[in-house]
Image 1 (cartoon, helix red, strand yellow):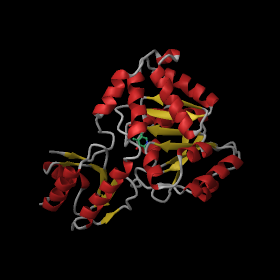
Image 2 (cartoon, protein in one colour):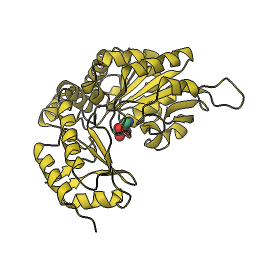
Image 3 (cartoon, protein in one colour):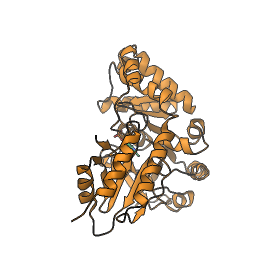
Length: 341
Ligand SMILES: *Cc1c(COP(=O)(O)O)cnc(C)c1O
């Protein structure tokens, strides 16, 4: 048995999901003819109360489309220095949107309204002008922590006063919604665009959805085509996404409980220097300077537990749909048995 905590993207479609995929009515989505894709886009835009939605191949594509469609080359994007859009999208801000970036040092990757205000500047011949503020919720590199909605509202009001678009990288927004009191409608109201991942905690094999106003989505649909992302009979994938939204949202709480279990096991190990606060399905912990994260991850893998390094001395666990109770006991044994030369 192997317990694979590398990411919540590794989940495989369940039997019910595969059945839904096989039954999906299909058509050519470039012509707007795929009933299952249309149903998914309608379902998600109704859930968030946005005018329209676009099914994309990945969260990266959804984020990059949003940044590209909100900006002109030479504009500036404001985000935290730990953002996925900055660190993990292969330099797409530069190569796709041709934009500059203003990095903010937030609280575990969460920026605040004051910081956004402080990074604004008066029009000047020297400056790249900010056009978009991009937030991430939950914040991956910050350990899966959630934004306080009041702070998001405060950021929105700074954006409104300064004609900035507000984008949300909501790859794990449903994890945040499982532990905070807001609803998707609350999020649809404050953001100009939102990307959500169907293939992370929700367990679909592929796909993300970009949300926004009708004109914005129309522009994004054309840009998606230009990037080669116009797909044909994508309905089987869309049906998996719809199934995930119907069946796998409530259960995210189980992943969060398992993350807390992992945290409790880690707490008792001599080699754990600190653990980031655990709010959702991500556990990041710090090793002492004498132990490299790469060595730790390789050693742990020999005991049947797979994780990833998240810095020189940082290791990340992500809990998900395919983690069962037996994986937790295996992990406990492995973490207790692991030895360093
Ligand atoms: C996974 C992830 C994405 C998108 O990743 P893809 O692999 O392109 O689907 C975007 N933002 C965050 C915070 C993520 O964790």
